[in-house]
Image (tube, rainbow, N blue to C red; front, side, top):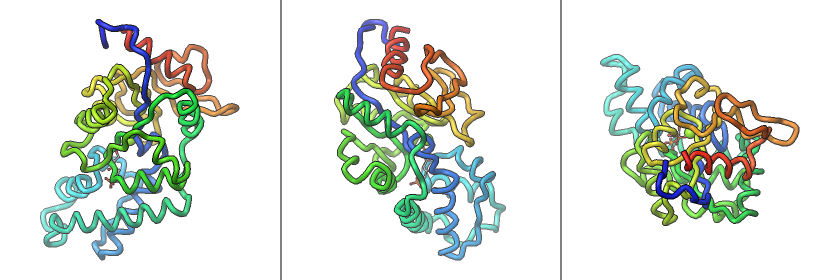
Amino acid sequence: MNTQNNTTTLKALIFDVDGTLSNTERDGHRVAFNQAFDEYGIGWHWSVEIYGELLAVTGGKERMKFYVEKFLGENEAPDDIMAKIPELHRAKTRHYTELLSTGAIPLRPGVERLIEEARQRGLRLAIATTTTPENVTALLTHTLGADSIAWFDVIAAGDIVPAKKPAPDIYEYALKAMNLTADDCIAFEDSENGIKSTIAASLQTIITINDYTRDHDFTGACIVLDQMGEPGKPFHVISGDAEGASLLDCDLVTKLHKKAIAG
Ligand code: XBP
Ligand code: MG
């Protein structure tokens, strides 16, 4: 909350990617991890359920380390597995981007509509995600088209910062790259690690949940919705006040931002 300047106008929208722009985790990243494990003959398989638990840790390389350390017994991991993780992760990224190139993973409802409207209104756009940069480029290219990459002032992704979400670093990096303050912006997230990161970066946050995150703690969000909504496919409000709206458009985003900044 900014107590000194309650007339701050919204200048930019900052989007998380996985789970927010698209439901990439269950049918995208998880599948690609399993393909990489098969390719390397490792014999691991991450079920939908196990993957939900592994999502406690952001970052694919970090997630694999977490699996070895917390899910496998003493002698269950192949020798030198920790040293092989970067290579395994490169294979996973290759499988994931190939999967995206088939068009198998669409954007979530309302995402394209909101981005188009924001561009028409002259709002700036950015991305702040823990996933690998190539994955963001592939998702944007195969959903909004290759030109859409240039719509974003900054695509802050992956190892560009050493500490991934829930640390605030990736959002702070994006703010610095845009030369904006937290109060100039609003963030879009889907997970508890995501909102911990935005709150630590002093950003206001709109949440759209998904099957993996519906039970997360979103204390501090401007609003929690099941999805952004499309004409004829209204969102459902999980918590907060949508002021009678049935889809998330720039008017509602601006109102939510203004109210949150005013405190
Ligand atoms: C997304 C992640 C990512 C992806 C996998 O979290 O944690 O690690 O699951 O991508 P968020 P990589 O939506 O909070 O940014 O394998 O490329 O890391
Ligand atoms: Mg996410």
